[in-house]
Image 1 (tube, rainbow, N blue to C red):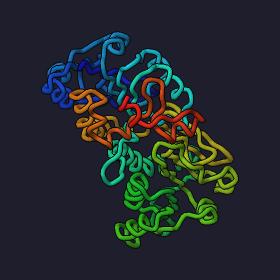
Image 2 (image 1 turned 120 degrees about the vertical axis):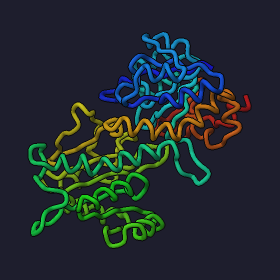
Image 3 (image 1 turned 90 degrees about the vertical axis):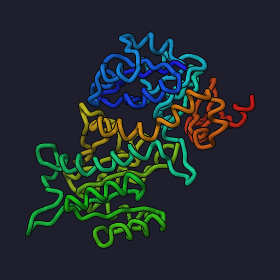
Image 4 (image 1 turned 45 degrees about the vertical axis):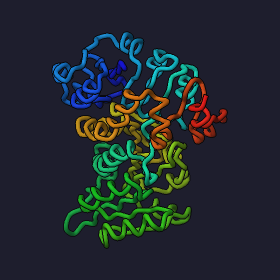
Length: 372
């Protein structure tokens, strides 16, 4: 199989779909890998590194898209890239289709085989290809939140950890999953007063066992969130429903009740965000203000630490990329029910139910596609 790795073109996206060691593994399995010129430079990976691993360096992305049997990326294809996809070509990347009607319709029209990292599952029901980026985004959230709280950034002028005689900032984290847990880890380490909200009693028990009295845990109800939002200096939203648009847990009225200069970091923005006033931003222009509250809603947060993120992502995606290349997508999906859950769009059909429901489009089961 010919595998193409294009340079990411999303704003300030420096990650890359494959690292040289992943390329070497695929070449060892008998496949060819084309890597676009400078695709890995943002993650500290040179064309020479890729060439040394057995890749061919291609300076024209149009040729790469036209010839490759499988495209391996990090972020969803932008409109200009979606036009280059063709019928039967495999696209293996993050897609986040539920909040993105334009991308969904374009991928349906392309006829490509679109497998989303974020809906591949594991035997425990986890999302193993989303987990490393959730870890990174969670750990970044208090960091960018602390920066946004600085007065020069429009924030309240509060130091997250306070100083002796002056209280620490109040950090409220919505969601006690992977991102929320990692956000709590860093916020506690920075000395903040941390409260984590979740509707899962098991998640709250796990958090209490992990952090002890370093954090407070609160069962999620609308009234509990209303009260906590008013107190928060930094509100971090991390709630995720696999494959579906994130639920709006914080209304615009709640945002209006927050302290002037408080900060919201919506980690769930890839899936539409869990704050009603959230809208996707970029690393070039990461924040905006609504009702005196600073919003940080960068849709590719882990791209800020591209080297860490790229290596962490390849650690989990490589086995699946090898399986797709070795077996072809149909056999790979037949053999692995967890990879099968990653199929979102194929041959003009939507095979991810939450995506179909989000856009009021017809749903077709993956099993029926594989039997055809």
